[in-house]
Image (cartoon, rainbow, N blue to C red):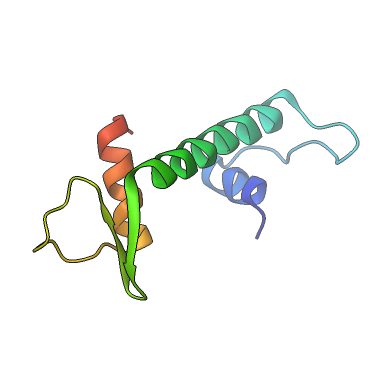
Length: 83
């Protein structure tokens, strides 16, 4: 399922425009998703280090901190950014 289809399903609104003529709402969904993805990617690159095949650590973690999964890192990012 494409991201826009997921937005549509969640919003329960009329269908998005055609591929040739996207609606303003569709364009806004794309911008929001792109900005979030870019923000997370930049944060990830600046704040994490892969420690093994099982996970990553943030630069604020201690040596005793268990490595984080990508999903856990996403939750850390959202909390830090107030999402």
